[in-house]
Every structure is written in structure tokens, then in C-alpha cells.
Length: 182
Image 1 (tube, helix red, strand yellow):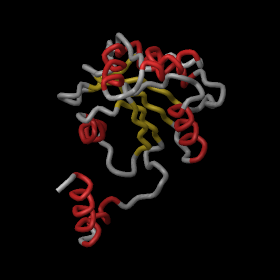
Image 2 (spheres, rainbow, N blue to C red):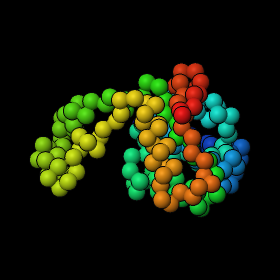
Image 3 (tube, rainbow, N blue to C red):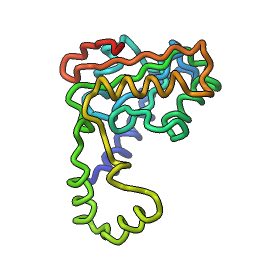
Image 4 (spheres, helix red, strand yellow):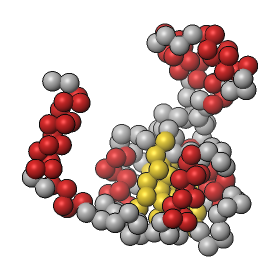
């Protein structure tokens, strides 16, 4: 049985037995908070538990590294929507120790793209069109600096009003221990 069939079979049982009822909530986050964090698999259940959050407490935006890279890219757009559409008052940028985006080997990733069938011509065409794939894939060297940079980008964004609190944290993905980034 392939993964999709497993998912669909489980889903049918999940719906038939009404297991969804324990997750019912509204689309508005109860704690009026948005979290930007990494897509790391270790954080799926650990992060909400470490924060004392349950289903319905927060809007969670995940990407590689938990980075807000550009003031008008998708992570920032999502933050703005949560502020103005879902009445969020706090934004938490939560990075984690031992993140795969720390010192990411961009050349290795590009080599994997090429070995998977993406041509060097495509990568060159993108570069000549103003999209440097290597720069676009870049991660960070220091998690504290990455979190601090994302926090500052959100705080200083011209569309974020002054009453929104923006805080940076780093979580240990093994223990769930949090530390605040000043």
C-alpha cells in the first residue's frame, strides 16, 4: 500500500469515528498569536507542547529555517493577514538549535537538483533572469542572528502597526527548552 492510500484509509476511519470533534475551534487564534518557525519534523508536536498551546491557540507559519527573508514575500504576507484578518497581537519568531538551514551547502542542493534532472541551462537561465538560485537557497550561519534579523524585519515593516509585539526565541529540538533572543 502506498502512502496516499494509507492516508486516505486512515482519514476515512478518522471521519467515520468522528475523531475530529476534539479539534474543533474557530479560525481566530485563541491566544491572538502567530508563530513563524521551521518546518523541522522534530517541532510538529514538541513546539506547541513546549509553549503550552493546544489546537486553536495560534496561527503557525512554517518554512525552511523559520525565516522571514523579504518584506513582501509569503511569510510576511501571512503575518500581515494574521494581524489584520485574525486579530493577532503577538508574533513569535521561533528558530531552533541544530537547524538544517544553518550553513546550508547550496552547491550540494544544486548538485542534487542537477542529478534529479534539472539542467544546468535552467539554472543559468534563471540566473540570467535575475534569480540566483544559490543566493535564493541561502540559509544562515547563526540561529540567533537569523531570528534577530527576522524579528527586526517584522518590527520595522511599514504595514505592521506599533501595537503588535514581535519576539524572537530559539527552541532546543530535543528538550523543548526555550530561550529569548534579545
